[in-house]
Amino acid sequence: MNWNAAIAVALFILTDIVVWFQINAQFLDGWWKKHALMLCAACALPVAFGYYFAWSYSSAAFGSWWGTRFIAFALSFLVFPILTHYLLGESMFTAKTTICVMLALCILGVQTLK
Image 1 (cartoon, rainbow, N blue to C red):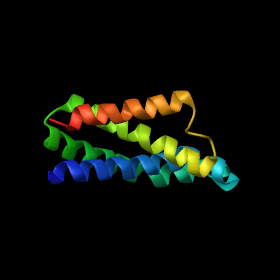
Image 2: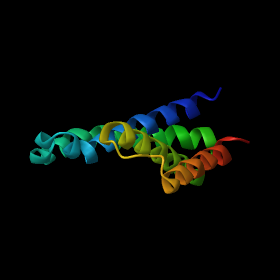
Image 3: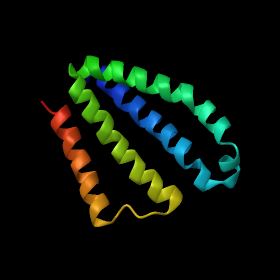
Image 4: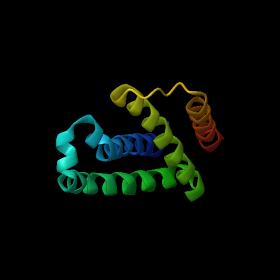
């Protein structure tokens, strides 16, 4: 197992989760809408460091910046529909979203399988 790849994927997913809460917490609880500056400030460093180190580990694991970009995109597109479905109640089982999730899985497969 390539530990750089595993660490990169874990960091991308964790950072995508933080980003999801940063942009959607306002819809979960009105308190966050009134405290947007605090939310953005609290998330800024974890997001910056998360993506920075995920990118470093991914580039080392896959040897390609394009591959790293596609992996980051695909993982973000897998995290967003799942959290939006479970926490905001918007279905991820529409034709458009299902096709996009399948395409994200294809992108991951193309980039990670040798």
